[in-house]
Amino acid sequence: MSLLSRILERRFAQYVAVYTAAAWGALQVVDQLVDREVLGDLWYRLALVVFVAGFPVAMIISWYHGAKGAQRVRALEVWLLATVGVLTLGTVTWVVRTYEPGDPASVARRLRSSALDELTETEDPRRIAVLYLQPRSTEEEVPFLAAGLTEALIDELGAIDALHVVSRNGVAAYRGEVVPADSIGRALRVGTLVDGTVALSEGQIRVNVAFLNANTGEQFGRTLVQRPRTELFQLQDDLAHEVALFLRGLLGEELELIERQAGAENVEAWELWQRARAATDHANALSDAGDMETAWDQIGVADSLLAAAEELAPEWVDPTVERGWLAYRRSRWAGATEQVEAGRWIDEGMDHARVALQLVPDDPDALELRGSLQYWRWLLDLEADPAAAQALFDESEADLRRSIGVNQDQAGAWAMLSHLLLNKAETAQGKMAASRAYQADAYLRNADVILWRLFSTSYDLEDQPEATHWCNELGRRFPDDPRFVECLLWQMTMHDAETDVDRAWELADALVLLRPSQEAEFSRRWAGMAVAAVIARKGMADSARAVAYRSQGDASVDPTRDLVYVEAFVRTLLGDNEEAIDLLAEFMAAVGGDPSDIDYWWFSGLREEARYQALLWAGGG
Image (cartoon, rainbow, N blue to C red; front, side, top):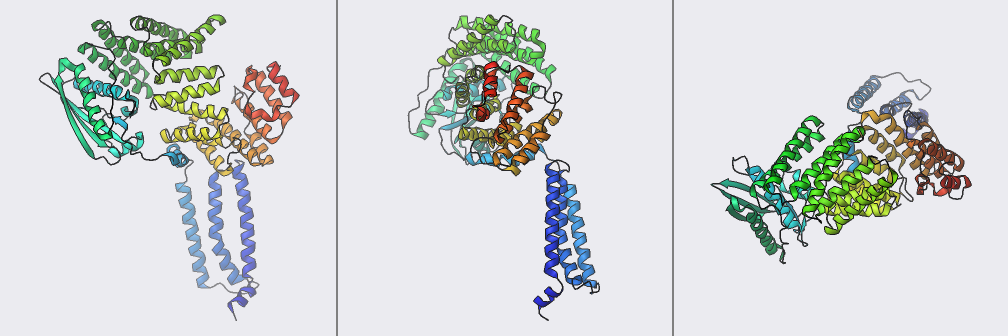
């Protein structure tokens, strides 16, 4: 009998077809239960393993029992079934043991792949990172000398138009660390590294500088600068001149150093200022680690050192400005919960700003300080009189603009101005200011905030290419930041965006994992509403409504009614205009929102609705 005849006699094909159909149907049921969060996603994996492993079992049974069950069980059949059973049990055990709901860091690293397409190595030698010079003497002051010389060199080279020099904030991450040159080059996107050492012996400061190819780590030049300690400022100028001279030979073009601005002429005051900056850096690290008590102590140490520097060099503006920034930092740490304390530190910071501007009326750092303090006072609602509050806001904007007028690369002023402009509902101008801040210094302490601001303003302006660019940049720089996952998700809700429902659910799960555990319930519903919008964009109306319904939250979960606002967006996408307007009215009534809150591109589909227009005109009335 031929093989085909035997297959037909034993009804092999019918058995396999029935099993395949039944397995596929059962798998779809499990998929729907997982999708609706009745079952966890582990169940889908287990079901898939069982159904795949069951396929050879179905084949064996159909072969031996297909002819009306007449065949007797054979030893080979027993061994085959046992083997399949053991393999299935082993696979199920492995899936259960290796399954994890999600490790936030690994999830983010996996998701960052979409952001890496813009990351390319650069070989442009004009893009330079000056690494912190390493101290090579045991004297206590050498580390401060090395740090100060590094930062002075960064400032002086950074003023050369032909060069792109990474800021102090950018190279600070590699201070005291042993990292391969090519790794630093890729991370900072530079072609040239400047590295070296500082030694102090018998009153002489010796600086050895090496130049490295950032892509290969190969050293291609070095230079030595030496001066008496009493000639520290001349040493700074000599160092900048020697480095610029070497780079000019490398690049084949003139590099004109800008004359060093007048500053400290007192070496002892300068060293105190460097010690104060080290104490401030330490305080910031302690604050980031949550040790606020020690951080406050370190800020006090820094302030005392700066006060001593002021006494030694009363004509030098930098220590006074730095004391003002310390007061600003203290006011931020006090925050909105301790407004009286925050107000006291703001007043102290304003006193320092006033003294600094008396010394140098157009000092950009002092103007940025005063503008920032005034804006922070406005944000905390410390001015009760509305007219006085508006004047405070206007004066803050004027100071920030004056600071930028003096120095177009005043990154901090640009960053603060961007936030202020967004509070004026000037989205395009706010985005431009944030972009200028990032161009001036991509390594600001709040660079993650700036990048999120650039994404969100691009999103608000319906600029999909820009939104994608800034989301990818956020992922490249901060792959473990939950806002990176969130921007990937919200991108899919934009007009003409590519929608992938499976990936949207994956991103939603990752966002819940990456957000703080105390926010898990809101995060799950928030992410669910975003997925509902993606599903609505996909045209799957019933599924979108179901997901939006189960993502709703009451006032205990959503006191600001943000979920209501997003659901109105979902309903607008679905054409449920009456339901969308009801939700917007609920949102406006709950939070006392301004009509501009709902005059947004999300609700463009409601423009012709009379009730929506009434909400815009009446502010929710």
